[in-house]
Image (cartoon, rainbow, N blue to C red; front, side):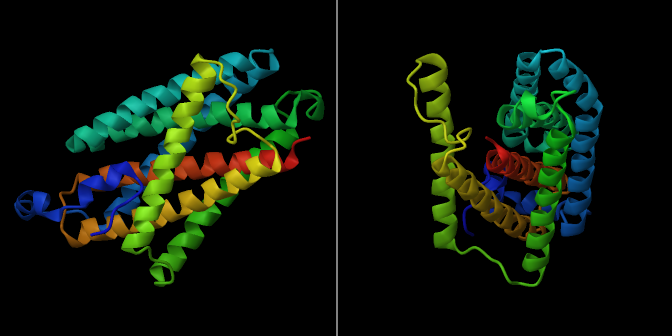
Amino acid sequence: MIRTGNPTFRGFEDARQWEDDALSRATSMTVSGTAARTGVLLSLTLGTALLTWNPFVGMADAGKLGSVWGLSLGAGLIGLLLYLVIIFAKRTAPFVGPLYAIAEGAFLSGISIVVAVQFLGPSRVSASIVGPEATGLIFQAILLTFGVLAGLLVAYGAGLVRVGGTAAKVICALVGAAFLYSIVLMVGNGLLGAGIPNLFWSASPLGIGFSVLMIVLASFVLILDFQFVEAGAANRLPKYMEWYAGVGLLVTLVWLYVEILRLLAKLRSD
């Protein structure tokens, strides 16, 4: 089997480790079951984002955008810890997965506000720091994210898109490079004040090109995720792996949304 750029799906690479477990169960992982579990996780994420939206907007309007950023990062850190639990203890996915989705909802709500305000600026939203232009930007990013998901699902179902072994290795290398770059930025700029160019937040032509690259990369990882869900179902993995796979898909979708939001914001910034 080929490799995946999403670490959640690394457990699918050697189907033999699951054979005894899967064969001993009356039910096993299915594509439709994975889709249902992913839908539950997405609903929890979107529901939490809606619940935390008004409190975060109120904080931003009160001049506490830094607090919104801090709470968003805190939710993201909690999500990361829960994600690591799921990776190292796969059987916990049905219980920890929903908690991860809730944490990601709070993270996405806060980061959406921060990105919109960062690039649009308070002067363009007059009465409220998170006004119609900012909310419109966020809504467009949500629509585009689900549009990309739907388009890739249709193309994948029709057999139009697949990723081979060599391409998968290249994608894995690029994902690793992007992750390493983000770590270097956090350590170099955050702790050492090195002043390394941050292409994630730069609205320069290079920064915009970088965002486009991240969106393309996330889309390819999503295709790899589809392939590994299909492989997991074909190899009759245990039923709880549907939740595990759902978490992996949610990870990629969150990444895709954030990158689309940043690209749209960069294109509209001054």
